[in-house]
Amino acid sequence: MRILLVPLDDRPVTYTYPQLLLKSARVEPILPPRNLMGSLNRGAQIDELLSFCENAIAKFSPDAMVLCLDSLLYGGLITSRRSTEDLKTIGDRLERIKKWRSLHPMKVYGQSSIMRISDNYDNTEEKDYWKTYGRELFEWSACLHRLARREKMTPGLLEALERKIPESIRKDYFDTRLRNFTVNQMLLRSMVSQGANKAFLDYLVFSQDDSGTWGLNVGEKERLEAEAKSLKLEDKVVAYAGADEVACTLIARALIDSVVKSKGEAARPSISVRFSPDKAATVASRYEGQEIGATVEAHLQASGLNVNRNGAGNHSGNSFTLLVHGPAERQGDHITLPGLPDLSQIDTKQTVQSTLAELAASEHCIIADVVYANGGDPILVEELLKKPELLSKLKSYAGWNTTGNTMGSALALALAGWFAELKESESTLASASAKETGEIKEGALSRGGENYRAAGQVAQKTARLSEPQKQCLFTRLLDDWAYQAKVRKTLSGEPSTKLLAEQISPYIKEISSAICIEPAVRLSFPWRRTFEIEIGFEGG
Image (cartoon, rainbow, N blue to C red; front, side, top):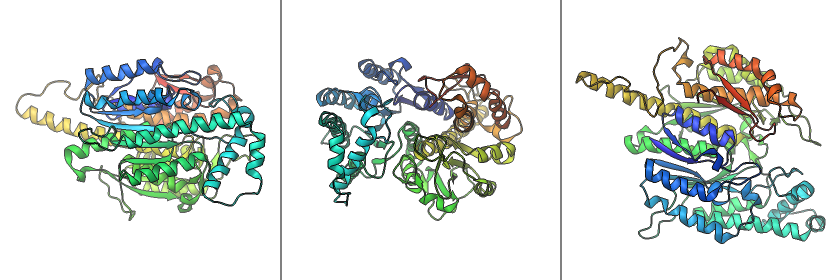
């Protein structure tokens, strides 16, 4: 199987990790050169990116495409908020993309962001005026949404905010939002088949990152959902909290769709959900404007899994248990912002014991670690690393940034492993059949340059993972726990690779030993800030 992926931008979580995920699934990844993608301060080379995709479709005949449309239409996620290009220019690009289906029959999955509105004075990823009016724009946006919903507001609040924010800035911000929302409406309507013209996309995610409960972005999400319902597209369109993990979710959905197409609906994998503690489902999810349970539900829907509503699972390789390790009262945050309480030290000892007990009693487990935003729960991970018999039960782990980021990547890694096992089983059966007829050939299990031989595997259950699968799990543990929860705060905002290597080295050894991997790791700060690191593997 081949999947053509156009990432959201050139960050590790959007460019390199999804590629590693595809290799974990034994799927051949087709990606544009990284230098064509958008970055923090430059947009993607859009014309070259469009041409790359057209040439790749013709040359490789992919089985599916996963398109992060912000890259193709605006030049990337951040550029979508900064770009001043007009609607006609962007519409022309969309018309070009819509023709790709005629080049080769394939499934097409898309992501388009609902333009965020962040509650801070940080203009790193916004237009310049955010450093002066960011929080006022956030409040103004919330007031406009409340007004549209006929909600009660503090008398005079809207007028007071509009006096603080220059009219030219309000107009620029509103015009940019309107342009992007109009593009999202165009994408939605392109999913309706018209006569002989087949719908452009098979599945579309409208992603919403950094959101409060109220805001113009929330209003846009509600309008898009209502229009999807009126067009009878509820099964093909979803809008939910997330962004950087969406490509992983769509890859997972593409894998499931491929299996269901060939084997029938009975082959669709299922999942049972456990919250630890139970009330974690109703705790507010930071930066998402909703409860943790709502985010979990949306991501399960988007992935294409069957959800066992009665909570009963089985122990087959086609059924998973999702353990949502969450907060009891308030979600913490490993990042402490000025003027906000320090929520980086939460006592989770009791919850950890509950989660470990659930893990011990389950099979084929996925842990979505959402006790904190911006990193995993140190108490949980440290306990897991001490207990190899429990760690070996994990199909995947994630605990980074938001609940949505964690959910999408945790589910996707487990499903990549599931798909790889199916392919290996099919290859084994084919090899056995060929051997009976004297046709077996050395290297029959090798595909796309990736050799999945069993040599060197040790007795522990984690040894059953392929090298790319181990690398994915290693990446999540090193990034989400070791870096985000432990090392990042020691750097004092200084992206020093020397200091990073010194501080993180003991964690690399600990994780490597626990999951039976001996990686030669490269570490860097790709955007020259401490918000994210890149974890690369020599020879990868």
